[in-house]
Length: 361
Image 1: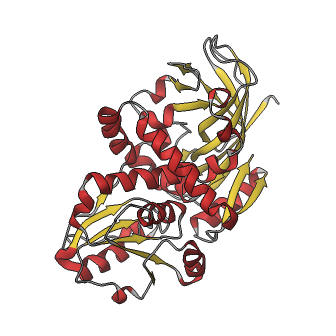
Image 2 (image 1 turned 30 degrees about the vertical axis):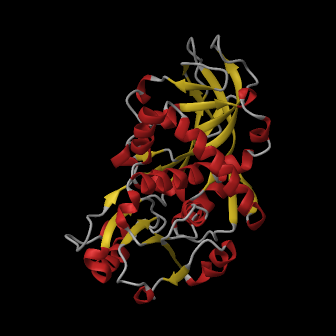
Image 3 (image 1 turned 135 degrees about the vertical axis):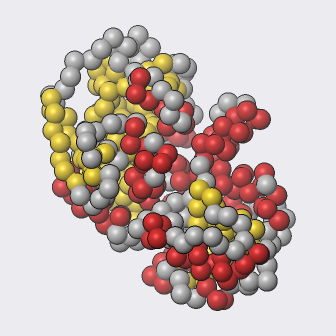
C-alpha cells in the first residue's frame, strides 16, 4: 500500500479521534518501514495517553498541533529496508503507534534487538526505544505473540512493582492494597505477591462489583473489597497502597481511613483516568507518588546488568500469562472506525477484564 492510515486523538480530550491518511515518504539511508500487524489494547494504552505530557509518551510518534498518536505494544513486519543490519521480512515486537505502518531508524543492533535512534526519540526512556527481533529469540516466545502484546508489558510492570516493593522491604507494610486489581497489571502483581515465599503480608484487592467474580477466580487476594465498601479494610495494619486506577477521590478516602498507617501510596495506572484530575491536597500518611517503571528499571540495570530485570520480568510474564490464559477471551478488532470505537470503550472502562482486545488498522 502507498497510503498510511493512522488514528489520532486530541491530547486534551481523548475520546475525540480522527483518521489521518498520508502518502508514504521515501526512506532515508539507515531507515526501515514496518507494517504494524496487530497491537494489544489495554488500560496501559490509556495510561500512556493520560500521562503523555508528563512522561513524554506523545513524543515517540509526534502528531500535529493538539493531536497525538496513542502508542502501544505490537507485532510488526519489516516491509522495506535501507538498513544494512535489518532485512525486509523480519518480524519485530515493540512500541508502535495506532497506525498501519511506521518508519524506524535501527541502531545498536544485536541478534535479538535493536534501538530506534530516530532523532526525535533521543533522550526519551530507552525501554520504549527497544525493538525485539523475533528471529533471534527463544522459540517459546514466537508462540506467545498475542500474550506479548496484551499481557507481557503489563505483567513486566507487575514484576517491576513487585521488585520495587521488595527493594524497599514493602515499606514496612503489613498489608498490600491493590486498586483496580481486576486490571492486568493489578492481578499480575497480586499473583506475584501470592506466590512470594513467606510473604507474611495480607493481599487486599479493590475492584468493582461487576469484576469481583473474575478477580475471585484468580485466587490471588486474601481479601476482596468492592468500591464503596472500603470500611471493610483493616485500618489497624500498616498499608502499602498500589493504585492502578488513578482515582484521586478514592486515594483521598483511603488516606483518611488509614491515616499514618498509609506507609506507601504508589500511583501506577489510570483505569479511572478522569477521576485522577480531582485529587485533593495534603493527605495523612505517605505522600502519593507516581510510579515511573523506567526509573526502577534503570536502577536495576545499574545493579544487575543491562536488561536483566526485563529478562526476569519476561519470565514472570510467561508464568502469569499461562496461569490466566484460559480466563481471557481474545478478540481481534480490525478497521479504523472499529478501533476508534473500542478505544472509547476502553476510556469509559467498559471493557470487561476477561476480554483481550487486539487491534489492527
